[in-house]
Image (cartoon, rainbow, N blue to C red; front, top):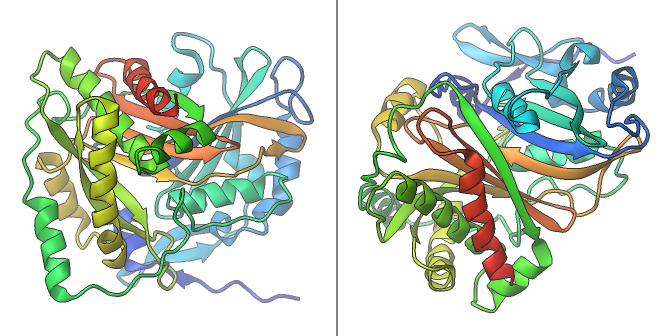
Length: 409
């Protein structure tokens, strides 16, 4: 018989993430999707929640991260193993009413995960689309970063394939030589000595309501189009993010700047027991037409990414200071994350996952965020914005989609 599972100290970076206060929004990674009929979903898009629970019980039992809750003892935080009642982590909610499935997602991203149980939850949404069941998976950012969330989702579904939990699109080599002190100092200076973001629409006090939307593009076509200009899928995505920002600025009646700085998380090698292994790269994204912007962004990311990656995980030394800084910063206009998702279609006990788009939390004074993930041959982009201060997320997503399809075409 196996003995009790020992408690694990939470790493400094994950402890900091656990304590971040982001304008009333839980610091949660969200994966939203649609399940087609089959297995646990009937022809009308209604799920069998009991069968879903039964299916997930043995899979959750193989995932230590889903069996731990945070506990503070002796001045530090620990991951404490606890018995898991999977049924308490699965609920069924209706998407009927104004805004449908997207409006429900916007409400769920603002719903905290209680600390008295493991920090994850799955919501099933009957009839989210005609003949489709919505699914919303929420995991606290202290438990997973984007890549770990994608890999975890793949393991929870009955895919039967190999899972690579660390790679993001087009980037499989995470090791890098440690940069010199001078190179790192220059990296920090170039990150923060940038043209300030002056837009009153993009940056400012963030309200407590959200709006979300998504767009997608064929991944092979996007990669081929980007390659003709010496760029990557991620470069094309950043250019599209720039067009989404341009749409916000234009609708606000502000003068469109030549470029805006975007914060781009990059994968780094995992250290110790940390659940988050992410560095930061700041990229000036031109707001000009996509082809010209793509050439410029490709050059900038090729120069900046190796140093950002080699500099290691971005720590948060003081959550309180971090919160104060982010509420008043003028360095970045947005955060644009991008992770590699499953390459092949997944099914949840016979129900095919036909869409999967991610959402990341807004932090500080940033009013719109972009999160991308590849899935089954498409790049999906989720847009989340401050509903009280910005235009509908669907308009921002439409601008992103036009840019992506322009490159793919």
